[in-house]
Length: 172
Image (cartoon, rainbow, N blue to C red):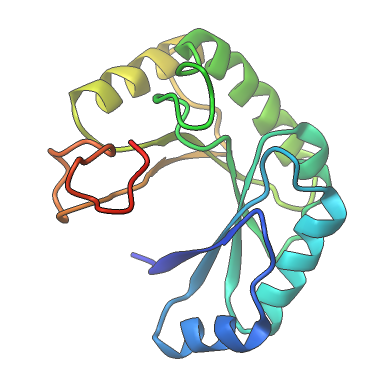
């Protein structure tokens, strides 16, 4: 198991803070490079992360961003497509499966090599049903260079969904 921390929400984090994250024994810094984040911004955040001794784990939403990632990165295709997080609705599993197959092809011919997906919000019934539907949409198995990802939140269990009402700062 690797220990990671979300450090970049479409914005820079200074190297001193990233070194503090490293000193807390985290190995991975997750960088959200979706949406308006430019490729230049994304690569700058990757450079900061590497200079702090952390593995950049980059969430991307365009094939061009996959192509731009260096070998020092891990990548994942679109954040939590199973919920309407920053989108009007969840991405339909068949649509996500088609995108993931293309993302895997792009990753396989570029330095990053592998890509995470589907990136599930939790291993609850909804998340597992979505995962199964994506696997079906990929022809019964994920592409060879794709690894599954689950983001865990809240109380440390997998039963409770992402959108927990007890988070005082939560917009949900």
